[in-house]
Image (cartoon, rainbow, N blue to C red):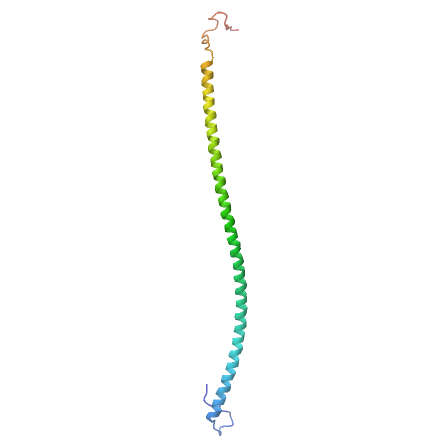
Length: 139
């Protein structure tokens, strides 16, 4: 910044320190006005950004509540699934036991039938040898 302002055609006049100070004060006042306008604009932008951030925070809070509810629901479902799995295992064990018992009963029944069945004579190896048996005829 120049120490003195020189206007052409006024070379004969000298600038006094008071005039320089007045000019410097005027420049400072102008810069202050420009900076104040910039600060007001920045403040408005900061306010708008704060409002957006507040809306985002509120949305995040709502999402967090939904996540907490979903987690609680998932935990309840997992517990119910565990109980169902235990009941299913118990039912399968009972079914397996019943099937094993039925298999043993069938084995015992077959053994009893085999032991109680009358013994049959061995079939004839040659036709007509036993008298009155079938005979083979070639034609």
